[in-house]
Length: 129
Image (cartoon, rainbow, N blue to C red; front, side, top):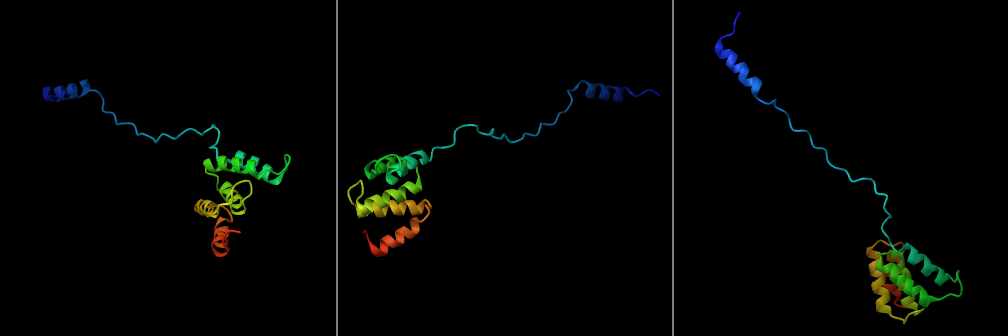
């Protein structure tokens, strides 16, 4: 059996069209696992300050500890905020400044530093010692 000329033209027309392709499904691009150095959170500076506070690397030096604690604070280290607050409250290595001590404790509590909330409550109740 022969196909009619109308059918032949229709088949020829379909054959000359490019095939219909579906768009490939796009997968989300995942960031590669980072091998970069983790963000610096001031832990090195805190460690140096603690050595000055404890006198483990020579004589105890609260002034140098305060310098290193401020460096750790600049890197958002909440533990450094608490230790620095203690220095200001007692006037060790820095001029005694109760307002500064309280502000540092407030910042430490907002950052979730361990014991910051308790120290702040004690500070508010007992004042600067």
